[in-house]
Length: 228
Length: 99
Image 1 (tube, rainbow over the protein chains, first blue to last red):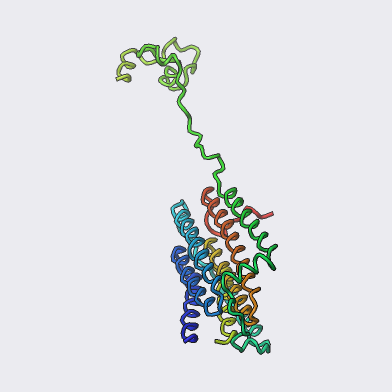
Image 2 (image 1 turned 180 degrees about the vertical axis):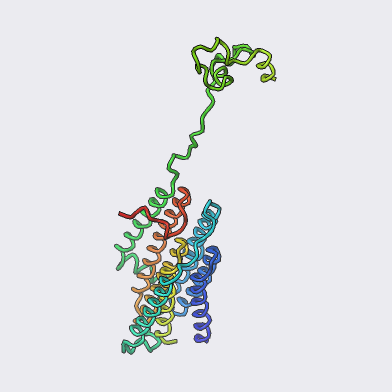
C-alpha cells in the first residue's frame, strides 16, 4: 500500500516539476508547482514528517503560491506582456547536457555510496517522531538560535520587499494643479487676461516691434464667439 | 519503501529545477525553478531524517522553508519593481548591473 502511495506521489511530484519547467504561460507554471508541492507533502507524510507536510501545504501551496499568482497577474498586464521563451541554440543544448551530467552525478552519489541504511526502510523512531509537539520542543530547546534567526530573517525580508516594491514618487502623481486667483472671480467675463491674449496671438506677441499695437489680439467679436 | 527511492526522486527534481533555471528567461519561472531545487533538498533532508530516526533533519527542512519564503518575497519585490519601471521581464535584458 505504501509502495502504491509512493509511486503515485512521486509521479505527481516529477510531473509537476516538468510542468513548471516546460509551461510557456507562467500562470500554468505556478499551478503546476502547486500540484508538485501537494505531491511532495504526500511524500513527506510517507516519511513520517507530519508537521513539515502540513507547513508545506499551508505556507507554500497556500500563501506563497497566492503571492506568485498575484505577481503574475500584475506583471502580465504591463507593456511587456509577452513572456520570453526558453533560451535557444547552443546554450539550451549545453544546459540540458549539464542537467543530465548533474543527474548522473547525483544518482551515483546517492545510490552508489555503499551506505546500508539507504537501502533500508529507516531506523526505528519514537512514537512522537515528526509531530508538532516533537518539532516544537526541538525548536525551543536544541535549535533556539536558528529559530530566532529565522524570525529575524523573515522580518528583514518583509521590510526589504516593501522597500523594493514601493512607488518611487511617494504615491502622488505630480499633476499640475490649476491655480485660482481672486481676479478670476471678480473680473468681467469678456475681459481677457494677459496670458489669454498671448495664446490667442500665437504665443508670439512681440514678433516684431514694428507691428501695430494689438495686432495679435483677437477682435471683440471673435472673443465673444470663443466665450460662447 | 527504501530511503533510496526518495533520494532518487529528490535528485530528479533537483535536476529538473536546475535545467529550468538554466533554460528559462522569465525571472518568475526562474524563481519557481529555484523553489523546485529547494524542495528537492527538503525531500532529501526529510528522507535522511527518517533514515536516522532523528528529528533534526526536519528542523533543517523547516528552516529551508523559511529561507525559501524570504527569497520569494524579495524576488517578487524585485520583479514588481521591474514592472513598475517598465523594464522588460526578461533576465537577458537586465544589463544595468554590468560594471
